[in-house]
Amino acid sequence: MAIDIRNTETTVGVRRLTVRIGAELSGLELRQSTDAQVDAVRAALLAHRVVFIRQQDLSACEQIAFARRLGPLTQGHPTLPVVDGEELILDLDSLAGGAANHWHTDVTFVDRPPMYSILRAMVLPEVGGDTLWANTVAAYADLPNDLRQLADQLRAVHSNGHDYARPDVVALRAKIGEVRLANLAAFASEVFETEHPVVRVHPETGERALLLGGFAHRLVGHSSAESVDLIRIFQSYVTRPENVVRWTWREGDVAIWDNRGTQHYAIYDYGEERRRMQRVTTAGTPVVGLDGRPSIAIQGDSSLYNLAD
Image (cartoon, rainbow, N blue to C red; front, side, top):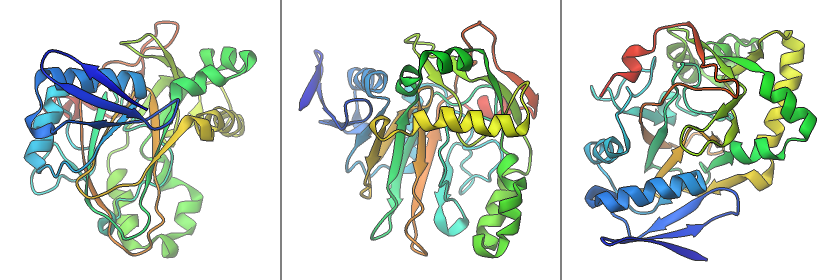
């Protein structure tokens, strides 16, 4: 069923992809979008968490220009090198080791993770390379009362250095390959750690969302074993099939998501074929828990990352 967001300047078609998350937008050219259309995109993001626009074929400059209309921009990444001297773009090229095949919310290892992520498809494999998004607001609402009360009180430490130091990653060096290992080394070249509430309050809607994902590696006040078990339980609610949408890319597609209420997973199922995407992110606001306490930066200075624009 298609729903129109109508205003005096334009009509943006919105077709829901699932009941809980995801919508495809139509009648929209991002490079020529009006202010009213940008407002419609914002409204769709609040309603559907992630939106998709087919056949945009944006240049890097056009992608940056549209992203800037959603808010001030961050650097491409706090640690990974920029592409072609462009500090605002993160180049996700599988040939350079850029395959993020784990559930995560973008850049949660800093105290102000991005608000929106804008991703465009440049080179795609013949088969595979889909991306999944999950609704972390719905996941919180799905929790039984006792688990919800527990989550409300927890805080988790997120780090970008965690994966690189994992024993299983070290043990699988030959299988991972030197290119991906080099990418992991660059990713952890400067270690950031931040303590976040496990339940964050969405600053615009007041909704409660689980803030976990692959960068969350321990819970404050709990042992490593307890942390692993509890994070696994809460994460299982995020990735329930009814909370997930899957997008099959075509070259030129653009996805935009609200990083404050989602996790995503780029599926690495295309072997040695190339998959290249480029991402731009807008600066986030401080994360606040139910008790009003903000996140705490433990290690690393992310001020340059958040003051790029």
